[in-house]
Length: 141
Image: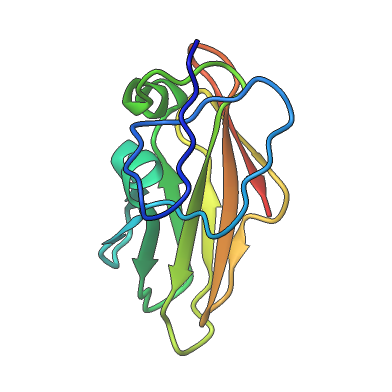
């Protein structure tokens, strides 16, 4: 396999996969998009929110639960990932008062580890790990 070395300028890469320890020098970044979940009695973080958008904002008027998609729905949006691969998901609570958001697991295939609440005017970030063909785990950072 031939390797190319980029010494100056920028490069657009489709993906980088490493199987051992890796070191990147300089600035690395990941493209992320944001979406909004509307306030309401039934607030849902869809699979697209979790895998594609990765940053979700909400402005609840009272304490609310945000329910994740199922593990199978989340895994269906991963493209080429394998068991053990991860993505990052953040909920930003824009409420100015004491309206707490609580992340709750979808109907099946989702495990939450760590604190699930996001108080007003704060954010919560989880590492979402692909565990199996039907399950993911959200680990609170």
